[in-house]
Structure formats: C-alpha cells, structure tokens
Length: 91
Image (cartoon, rainbow, N blue to C red; front, side):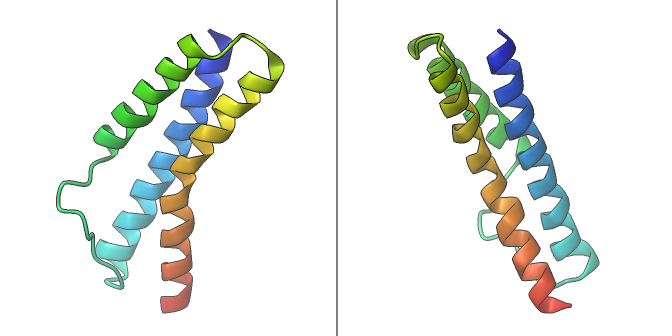
C-alpha cells in the first residue's frame, strides 16, 4: 500500500501545481485560457487515481514496478510544465 500512496502523492502534487499555474495564467496574468471547458482537478485526480489503483493491482510487487507506477504519475506534471512555460514567455 506504500507504493500507491507515493504514486498518488506524486500525481496529486502535479495536478495541484497544474491547477495553481492555470489559475495564475488565466485570472492573475490574463495570458492564457482553458481550452477544455470541462477541465477539473477533481476529474484529473479521479483518472490518475483510478489508473494508479488498477496498475497497483495488476503489476507485480517488485521495485522496478514500484518505480514504473511513480513514473506513470509524473505524467500529471505535464500541465504544470506547460503552464509554467506559457507564463514565463508572457512575463
């Protein structure tokens, strides 16, 4: 159960930072807009959480697969990285 907590922590932090930078870009700096009208951090958490739980049940309990579960959840950081680049270009 420890590996699922780490994976969900990684994705939760990435999704939170994505939401924060989206909020800054849209509402504070007015340099960006949300292209997906139904975008929600709750939906993102449900998707990454569900996929993580599924992978946790399917993958063997070995060190290599523990890291692959965490690496999968690093994908949630893509939005944060993209938003940061957009904000830095606008400043």
